[in-house]
Image 1 (spheres, helix red, strand yellow):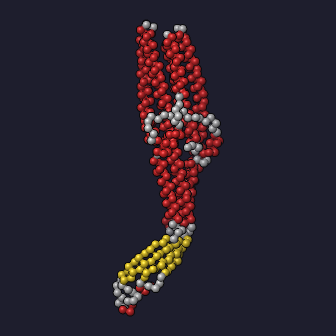
Image 2: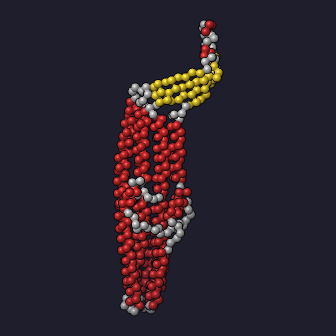
Length: 415
């Protein structure tokens, strides 16, 4: 009888060690590995190179275009022989040509501003890709943490049940317990074993996801993350006004307005100048070495441009409305996660007290069992109650850690 009592007491050391065991790997470690491994970030960074290329295209609108040209013109012989010196049947020529737009309704300036905004938007897309990657890693990280805790707890419960089975079996052999008590213990053992296999199957899936995200080999060791109890709702709401998603929407609004100006500039007069230099020329213009042309293009009626202006004006208004709506959504999400964080804090305090009460009850029942005032079933019932509370306590602790990450993520504070 004494062996069973001391066996019950010894399990507290096991559970206490489990609750406080941590490894050195942190969420940030896995996130940094994911940044190096993920192709999505590399794909997003290509947007910046594309934006730089579009800037060069826009710059080309205000710089001269220079090119060389060689021609060999063949025509019929002139019927009047007196004109044959002017209209030769073969007229080769070589020229160097340049043209420069002087005024296009400020379209070039708008194009340069548009390309800068386009580059800023590409950079914001990289930030968004990193944020999405961070949340994928975070969700996988805390899933692994919870499952590893559950598996470790199952191993300890299996060890406890195995010892209990041996104890009850010896009592059955002595005629102090019923065979049904032994069967109940064996059934509980199999149930815990089945639960452990379920956890292991789930862990195999999330371990594979983590390897895909980070490129790190399995198994993945994780640790409890520190929680910040000093988070201020007002500070988080203020931070959310600089949320990366809002910056993206502001840039989209800016781009839509610039595109409207760019299309509008097509309705303005366009002035350009062209110049040609002829190192080699034959025929009537053989002695003329250069010429220049000043051109004026005045749009009178272009209905398609008017339609495009209306379209981009609508897109700008739509982006402004989306920005206002997304601001409300982000701040609502911050408030929701903040309130959930407070509830989880309260739940942890309640579970902490409940675990202490269950532990005290288990010790009392085990003490009574030692002197014959409680049955082994009462001891096991108290043990089961303690184990269930401890499981819920560990789970809600991990949930709180993940919720704090989601809270700061919602406010745009992390990553």
